[in-house]
Image (cartoon, rainbow, N blue to C red):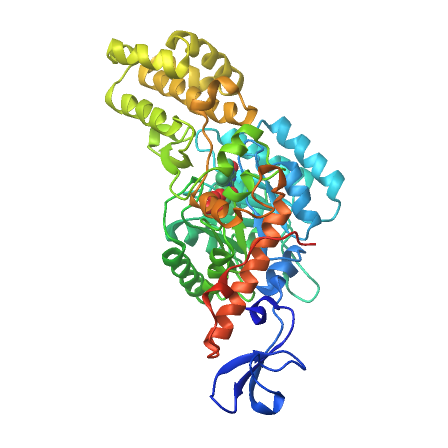
Length: 512
Ligand SMILES: Cc1cc2nc3c(=O)[nH]c(=O)nc-3n(C[C@H](O)[C@H](O)[C@H](O)COP(=O)(O)O)c2cc1C
């Protein structure tokens, strides 16, 4: 239906004098099937709709973007500097996927982004690392030293001094009495209890400790008590990677209501934005997120199959073939012992079932030598392609270079040793996919959520179907343009226009 596609023109809603049908007319063009303008009664006009306006205008103002859209962080540099640069140049935000990378690699990435992007907005990830607090502290030191102004905090269950320090450093009062925030923290959450921590001012004991340690000034700590820790909260529903698998339709309104309650309780005087992530892979899903009230949307899975993603062409080809149900939950490398799981691609790789096998062994046995010999032989042959002891030797050297306490603990505790070896496999399986090791396809660990399959079905037969054509910007622009069309169709429907089903379908097209 043409009236829906012409989102950038005001549409006049009219009723036929005879017959009483409601329809749409553009300036000078009568409703199709009627004789002339004289035959219609004007009911009202729907103004133009721009994809730029789908979210909260304060998002674009606070972050200097054109669109209310973010390409979320993807660990190990899969969320590459190329993604971040392309997004910034197209008026959106990309978060660099620093999790899992060494401080040296993150530093090099930040230096490159700042040299290339100048004042254009971009961000980087801050992942909660309970096992490696020194790394988390080092990343915050780096972001503060380099002046990284946007940081996406993820995997936090409780707050750490590091994340509080980042958000509160540089808080100051402007001459007209407003609080100026230098560092913008985006908190990714999937539970109300975590959201509540970021929606409240930081706890007094953390602020006091940071002042005592000389990490914050007394004035910064005073101002921090008047603001939420994060002014952008990303509600993450069923997504690729770490996820609680909750549906956006249930989770988002709960968090938005929590935001409203806490904003009133603390008397905040400026908007606290709530954005949506998880499962966004089609125009309709993006439109529905904005319909729920999302200030902005954030995608993940769909960007991993993009040209710019830092993962091998082989892995991208596998992602491009995924259907909706080709994903599964599997044990996570980083919080393996705690039973945490991540959502991964199931089609074309055995990773999910193999990782579950390792988790079952870990839960059942206290040491590797307690595992029945036949099981041990199978794991060594199929998964490790090496002896347990040989893997341990390599793992030991790795941890000696990174955090020697892990090795000391493993020397005292055989179960910990087994966990470190199993985590070697879980960690390597991501690397094999990133590097495209052809001998390890069956072990590829590729994080992905149902959005990937939904996206693939949507772009089938369009210019975005081949992996080689999927630029992260065209993905974003088409999702937003399509979401605007879907929104327009729904608007017209609510005015009584008989909108046909096909008006809700938007086919991808190159957008400039
Ligand atoms: C391959 C991959 C790696 C990811 N790595 C991270 C990460 O390191 N840090 C993070 O905050 N989120 C990470 N995510 C989550 C995304 O930033 C985003 O929140 C999520 O993918 C959105 O849901 P969707 O996959 O349904 O689009 C990752 C997602 C994927 C697909």
